[in-house]
Length: 389
Image 1 (cartoon, one colour):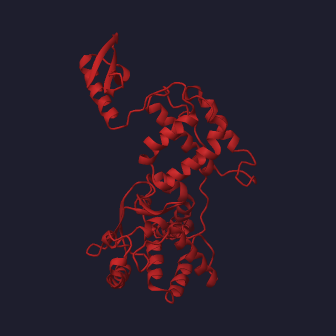
Image 2 (cartoon, helix red, strand yellow):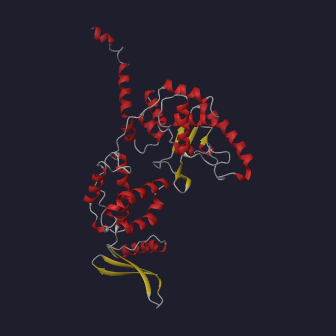
Image 3 (cartoon, one colour):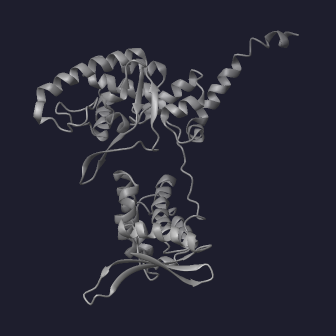
């Protein structure tokens, strides 16, 4: 049962009865709202009633501290909002860096200056866990995101009027110039892969041709490959969460993408599918993850962990005396090769799954500038006669 009481000009109190106590008195949840008229207030009452009965309603206590609110944020907001890996990182940052400083403070007392001071503190020497050196701008930015998340939630639930973290801008992550392979170095890698297990050859070629991340590659299933149209659909990723094991989640930016793949790779994937199908039949009821058919998995169907891909890559490059770069930089190699071939940045941005082309420009701006200089040289011959005149 729910009802409305007028409390003043454009003010209404919404009440939802959720039961009765041992003496027969009504137990109600209430909320005071501002509405133009009773009709608008009724609509708010309906929404409030839904919140209460679905367990989404949080009773506001203006004396609540950040530490006390942490559990509410975690249970009723963060678990449903973030991927397991992101949630784990946010929780770690809050427990390690935010709560020790501001956990004792009431939410209503936290101001923008506190968030600003927090980030300034993180910029100083000795803030790393090992006490050595400074934190990177990306680490500080991630700490800000965690702090902003819990304060934004408090604002949405009316614990505070506005989110004090909004005006406090975090430092922009600095994009490092990535170390990538040249076409000649890629050719050398491919020659060594001929002597490796077939699935690893396919995996590395897939990374080079699509620019997919480790977790995205680990999350690929054969249902994502369209052999008729020569495309692969990247829509999910595998992540490893401490204490919970391997889990499936969406892509890093939440963007799905359809990527064209070269014909030789399509044929290799078809061959690998036949191999994997034989493994699937041989395992029978002992198969793990029976609802999924991962391209890269153990014989029992368990998907590869992203860190196992990275470790294999380290051993491979070391054994063959190849230039030592991170597996993730195969993604940068893919982008750089495309840029040098004159592929438009917008196409590259879509293949990599960047949320915005500006991300692509920030990361690969130096490569694009070098490619632009090379492009300008093509006009040398055109103007050669002009120089003679």
